[in-house]
Length: 422
Image (cartoon, rainbow, N blue to C red; front, side, top):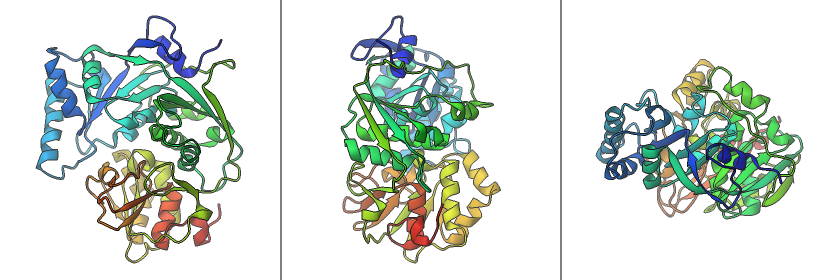
């Protein structure tokens, strides 16, 4: 019986061949944490009694959730992270001004490559599977052990194979594909499983769209998301990969828990209604939903292609009266690209706010917290009760095309409502 990509990657990081359902001690290529999860991990690290990290070049610390610091408590958390990085001479520590949203920054810097095993004290660590790596989130205590030993103990997950057929319609991106998938299988549909995304529609996606899809594997309960490596992946890695890599492919006779196929050639833009990422409707079934705020950004949709889509829609248009539009690039490099290509000017002229990189409003942290009764269209990844602010607020998840169009319309809508074709 053949093996899946995930089984092959994990086998290469143990001393034996491992299959789904087996337990294994797995070597780690990169361990990461942010300003919320790192302090907890550092306290646990101190309790272990070790005097050094396993490899200072294989740990990444990225303050991104509450930075620039919004209050005294967040400043103290960031300082703990900064002090730990200095104490242990961590190579990949990114201070404000050089940081970005961690799951946008690390791929951009080439710190994750195909075949890697990446663990992080953040559930959306599964993002890096878009590069053909095995990446998964874990608790801060487990991360402390990974930072000390360079390995984790885990159960090898089964894999569900998702095959996306057809040519992608205009304005349809990775966010629409993953929302459609989660709407189909539910928030527990891939519980503790790897989600392998393949098919002709996936190969049409830019790397940004694939990162979006793997990012939201956790919203279906997944242990990891992963995409096969192709020419798009290798073009992305060229000139940025920081270490050699090995490409793994699933065997034709690999054992999958399920194989699910979709024809996306007629897929509409998708919108997840409150209060679950699985409460998904096609745009034609949304109805009249007036909004108060739009957020375009996050580790899900704050990348270059996302901002380009938003700029195409906002060019020459105005954000509707009474609507706040907040646009947050994922990294400093994306911020600069937005300036070079005139997108930043487009956003400001349209009446939007263009922010420094931060997770900010995604978790109800800062830069866009919602009041009671307010509605927000957001390109972020979760719309649970109170996720972006008051428990009586509402979050509608969508891709950047729907988000930008909604900002202009003052209600949930898409580019077609503005008379825009492909």
